[in-house]
Length: 391
Ligand code: PLP
Image (cartoon, rainbow, N blue to C red; front, side, top):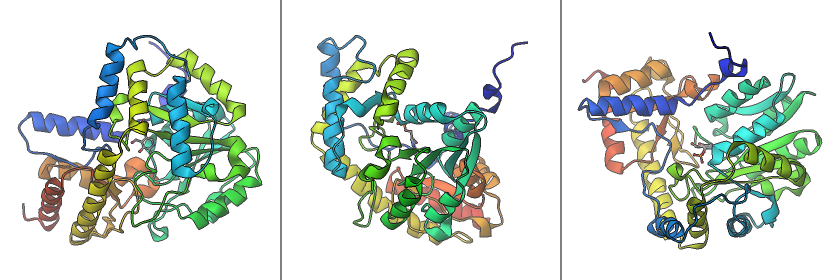
């Protein structure tokens, strides 16, 4: 029998992909499934971005590129960062990676080992914990609480630091809760972390463009006091509806940049070349399609929150960012995972049980509202019928 290193006995996954597969299998059997499970925009990539990739392919962009990404793309990212955060970054600190996930993979591999503590949000993106466990580091969940608007609490986060803490993972706007951590709380968090220069920070800002109610996104890049150990994760997947292109960018401090470059050389060589040209078009081209998509998410956010709050036993705070609602279902009489699975099998609605995002996710389900308003209404109607036993 084959044996692998023990990390592979601990590696987890994202249940959203299993739900997607099961929903697909049910649909293939002829069942009508409404999918509010998957975390990706229901929009197509804007046409001018697709055209840029086609042109690059026709023009012969078929070879390897620099492992860090082509310079014009890294320059475009630097312009984008300046425009969205007001912070100047050098293209020499920008790394182009095959999807936002790869930044988290690299950062957690860099700081995770037995004896190290890594803080991560719970509920949070499931890959954080999975990768931490893979490295043998100790996963330290930071509870993300409904009573706190699903924002990070600076006080609680800082109270979990130990002498062994090597990395703190932050995420705002957040998956799966739609929570946005307010600036005052980030200020406090940074003030605390400034006292611990031995700790690296991974700020996952992939939903930075999806902040509603006239608020604007606060990037950790705006805090120079932690700039020498901040890894910033962002990318194309959500903003330009490009999840399948596998395109992400990250900003790395000088001390780490060459290490991640070498990891790229060892593991993926470079991101596929035509996609990199598409990435430039996304940043430099017209933003109306992206703006319209985000405006649609904002409208659906209102619809889904209102409808969910009408369901018996369900309460849902208005999400402030991303494209997820995280309703509290603890008064329905169901546990979250059995509810999610019964809704899929019996009511034809795919969503994700809160515990798939961590122990603090019990009592909640994640509803992705990256779907048409009509489908959102059909889904919530079906959930209502299920909960009242009407069908
Ligand atoms: N970070 C968060 C919080 C996410 O929700 C996701 C995707 O769902 C990612 C990172 C990964 O993005 P990508 O598809 O670019 O790897």
